[in-house]
Amino acid sequence: MRSVSFILAALLATPVLAADAPVHKSDGMLVDAKGMTVYTFDQDKGGKSSCTGQCAENWPPVAAGSTRLESPYSSITREDGTKQLTYKGKPLYTFSKDKSPGDKKGDKVKDMWHVVSD
Image (cartoon, rainbow, N blue to C red; front, top):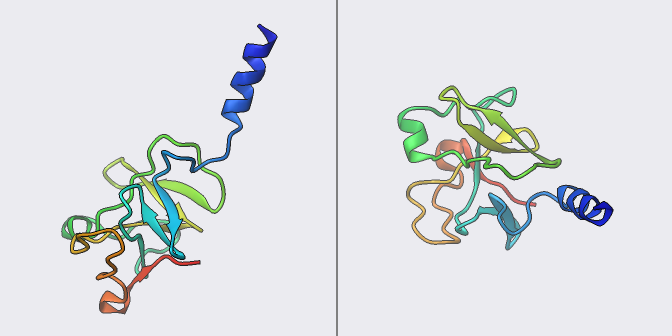
């Protein structure tokens, strides 16, 4: 029984953002689990998303999922009650016009949207 407890403790202590992670780094930028580019929005302040309604349809929030998070990742609760992933305190989004992994059509849109890079 002691070995089962040890294994369980080891599993619970595994690093966050493993294989089922909501985002990972690829070619020096963050991408979601499907390989789509991840963005931040300059209008988000104080760790809160200001992208709702039509904005959130065009810029879907990256869901935090149930994976345990470690710094620099965390999550916020959006106004609709869903959990959104953050990086260094900034809420993360994808862009609806990016159709293929690696697309970065949202970078610098209105000088407010930015690819998350190293």
